[in-house]
Image 1 (cartoon, rainbow, N blue to C red):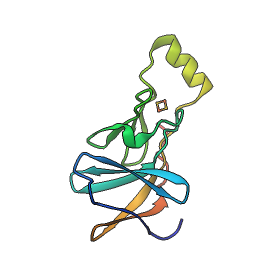
Image 2 (cartoon, rainbow, N blue to C red; image 1 turned 90 degrees about the vertical axis):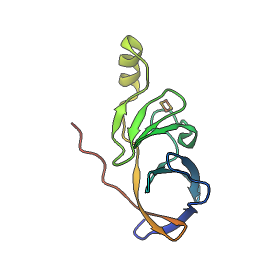
Image 3 (cartoon, helix red, strand yellow; image 1 turned 60 degrees about the vertical axis):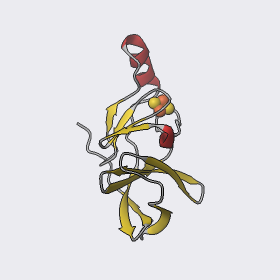
Image 4 (spheres, rainbow, N blue to C red; image 1 turned 180 degrees about the horizontal axis):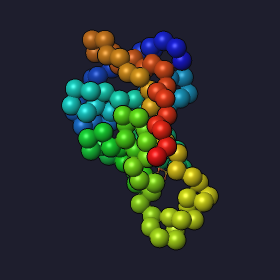
Length: 124
Ligand code: FES
């Protein structure tokens, strides 16, 4: 994806809100934080939770299924599920924490355009 492509509009997307969108069969989520917009994959990298149904607090997006949290600025994992103890350890062995893919955004009038995938966060 080299250029910016119209994805959706700003209609109905209030500050602090999430909106589902798709490009061909690729599900995405659009988030508005104040006057800034973010675009990410619409399915959670853990087990496919539908992220437009998640919650947004600042740039932190929480998956509705097992409550993993991602920072929409670069997709890095803040929390990998809300499981704890042995359950979390086993879960991490079976499915390593993976960042959420995020994309460049451009706004033109009421159009939200999606651009190239952003570089993945640097592992810490
Ligand atoms: S599917 Fe998103 S945290 Fe499990």
